[in-house]
Amino acid sequence: MIRTLTRRYTLRTSSSCNRTRMSSDNSGKYHQNLIPDANDDDDGMDIRNEEQSMVHQNVGAGTPHHDLQSDMEMMKERFAKLLLGEDMSGGGKGVYSALALSNAVTNLAASIFGEKGKLEPLAPERKARWRKEMDWLLSVTDHIVEFVPSQQISKDGTNMEVMVTRQRSDLLANIPGLLKLDAILIETLDNFGQEQEFWYASKNENQDMDNSSQRDDKWWHPIVKVPENGLSETSRKRLQYQKESVSQVLKAAMNINAQVLSEIQIPESYIDSLPKNGRESLGDSIYKSITVDSFDPLQFLSAMDFSTEHKVLDFKNRIEASILIWKRKMNQKDGWNPWGSGISSGKRELFEVRAETILLLLKQQFPGVAQSSLDISKIQENRDVGLAIQESYSRVLESLAFSVMSKIEDVLHADSLTRTRRCSEIDCSGDTDTLGIK
Image (cartoon, rainbow, N blue to C red; front, side, top):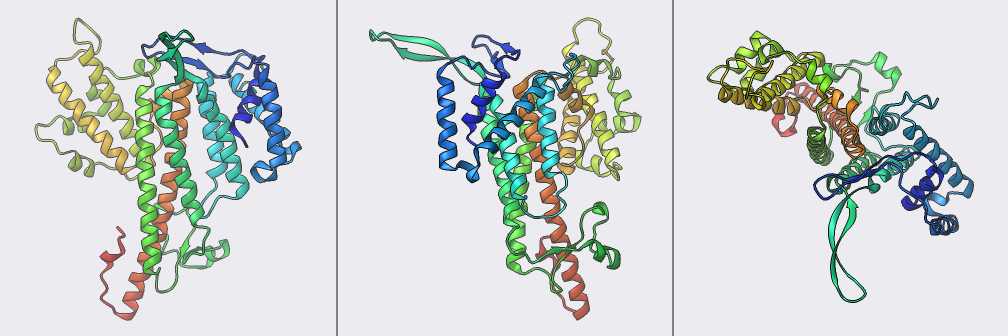
């Protein structure tokens, strides 16, 4: 579907709805408009011309006119729900527009990718729906702008500086990057549509076969099957390359998500729920380990019990809370405050740096861990539509990249076990390090 046509239909069908705006000067504030104005009479003619062109040229996959109208009705329903804050009763009990958009992106990704348990291409209809509806949601960002100075020459030749609107700088930087990451992931899945040397056991086979190739920490994944002699060298190298490619996507999505979350203001409700000092947040044992004179973050993490995701998440919540507590104490060191203590600001700053290092290593070690209490609180209380879209889009791409990489690792793991078993049967002395499998 043509993106401009989609947006203009949204303008015309939603022009009577209330709109929220924020305007400012060049000092970092911006103009934010969830549904842009559509009061130009020429838009009607443009829309009709583009619609006729789309039908006559069979844009997309030869979409008939009635299908286009169906898409318009669906889009109107989507945006009406967003404008009402997901409260379709109109009773004023809806959530912020930012949270409504965030939930829309999250729910769309769950409906498209949530049931994918195998390395295979998306069904054409799912791929088309993902691109179409994400385009609708991302079209909002085209109208979140900031004012920037621009040089213009008047009719009499005078050079003037005027203020013009431009898409907000953070959106201008991040949205194209996220679209690129999205395209890489979809392309990676499409590549698995070609003939592969691995396959997945059916449900009947699952009940009758030995599940020794199934990793204990991924017992819910479909069981991967490979040939008796394992994958060919070409197939193995191709999988390794795809794993590295998806790993880079994962890192990029994580970086964008972390950067966007850092820009969202911490809610007062979360701050009020914090303990009064870092020791109380971390517990005596963890606090003593972090505040010792000689500290090694890798050794510290290796000694922690991360046997379950719940324990990882609980530790992450404690570390993030302690970092915030120490930061607030350093920022409020003048005069009396309830966050004060007898620890010097130098030591407190050292402890904060150590905790931030631990948090960074933890995120790298467990990229698929659930959101922390701080992240959830920020997302729920955030009112910035632009940040909400960036955060939710990067988060769902991060989740998809982690899922794809995990499934590639399942195939490589099954290949490693098969080759090791084959070698033991024929008493070979192959070097398993060449597999590249941990």
